[in-house]
Length: 483
Image (cartoon, rainbow, N blue to C red; front, side):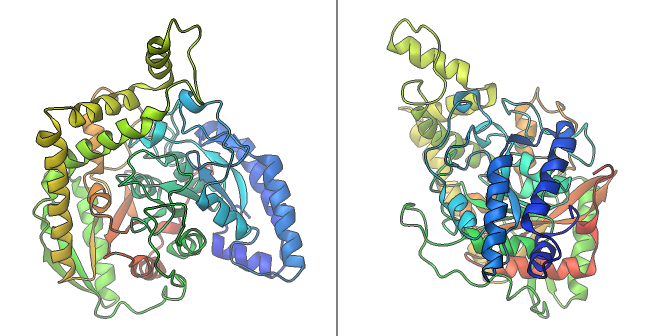
C-alpha cells in the first residue's frame, strides 16, 4: 500500500479495497521501521492518526465521499496543530504545544485527512538543506550521505521514501520546490495569498506561502484543492474562487507557449541539469507546446534582494520569541535584559541568529534606505520582468536548482554557497507568482527537477503541464532503493 499515490488511495478507499485505518497502521509501522535512517519526523502522532482514520472510515460508511477522506499525510512542523508540539525545528519552541490548528491543518482535517505527524525542517524555515534543525539533519533517501533540500526537507524525504503519499510544506524562497527537485517529487508553491498563512509560524511574511508536496501533479492538485481558499483570519488571503484543479489536468498542451529565459543558463548551472531541462523542453514540444527564448534581465539581482528582504522580515517576526510569554526561557536570569539575551542566544541556532542580525542591520537607522528600500525596488523590477514575459508566453520553464543534492555538511562553512542554491526559485516568491517543480531525470543517481512558473492564480495551468509531462515520462514513478 505504501507505493500508492494519493489518487490511487482515493480510488482504493472508494472501492473498499482497504480501510483508512488499515492504511494508516501500515504507514505508521513503516515510519517506525525506516525513519530512524532519515530523521524526517520530529513528532509522530500515532494515536491521533488512528482516531482520525477510524473517523474517516465511519464517514465513508455513512455514505460520504471525497478524494482526501481517509488519506494519510504529515505537516511541516511550523503549522500549528492543537495540543501537539509545533517546534519549527528550534530549541526555542521545543516545548510549545499550539492552542489551535492552522487554517491549512483545519481545512485538510475537515476534508478527512489523517495526520501521521509533524515533519523535520530547517530551523524556522531558514535553510536550503535541512541541516539547521535542532533535531539534526534530515537524510535524502536517494543517498543517505546527501541533503534532501530545505527547508521542507522532512516532508520531502518522508514522501520520497514512501513513508506517506503527501505532505504540506512552505515556500519562502523555494523551500517546497527545491527539496521536491532534490528528492524526486512534485512540489507546488501557490500564488501568494492563495493559501492561508494563519497559524503558519512566520519567517518572512511577504514571501511565505504554504503548498503541497507529493509524487505526482495529480496528487498535488488534490491537496491544493483541500488547502486553498479565502480566510478571514489572514489579512493577506485573497478572496478568489478556487477552481477544480483536477478538472484541467488532461487539457491539451497544443499551442501552449513556453518561455525559456536565456539568463537561466549561466556558468553556475550544472551542465547535466541544463541537458535535462532541454530534454524536458523537447518532450513538451512533442505534446504540442511552442517554445521560445525570453529574457529576465533583473534575475542577477534576485539573491541579494531576497537576502535583505527575508532576513529583515525575519528579524521582526522572531522578536516575539523573547523567553517571556512562551517557548524556551533561560535559567536564573539576572534581570530582564539578561533574560532576553540568553533566552534568544541559547534558543536560536546559528543560521537563525545570522539572519536576525542581517535583518536588524538592514532595517537600522542609516541603512534602511541603502539596503531594504533598494531591495524592494529590485523586487518591483523582477515582478515587471515577469509581467513582460507573460505577455509573450503562458508558462516559464527552467531548472529548479543549479546542482543536484550535495553531501551533508559540504556547504556548512560557506553559507553564501548554500544561498546560491535558491537562485532559480526565489524570484517567484519576490513576485508572488505560483511555481512548480517536477521530476525530470537524474545526475549520478540523484534526482533533478525542472521548474514551471505561471501568471497569478494559474496553478491549474502548472498542474496541467506537469501532469501531461508525467503521462509521457516515468521519472516521477522511480523510488529510492531500500525504501
